Length: 89
Image (cartoon, rainbow, N blue to C red; front, side, top):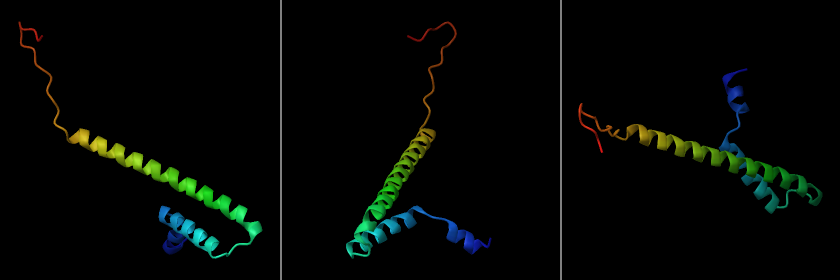
């Protein structure tokens, strides 16, 4: 498979958002027959739910990465060192 063909085979989040927009616009303009609307609506809702789930996962991953980076960059507090013969209270 050529590189261009392989690139065309990949579907991105933005592609799915564009599909949602196209379906919405086509519906507003009356491109579908009444008996087709249920099927179109079902697919629309599935894609919308998928996008919502993926965006939630991406947000959670970004927050986790941000927290991990912040904790890695934070200065570590040294534990009090106990000298021989002294007790920390």
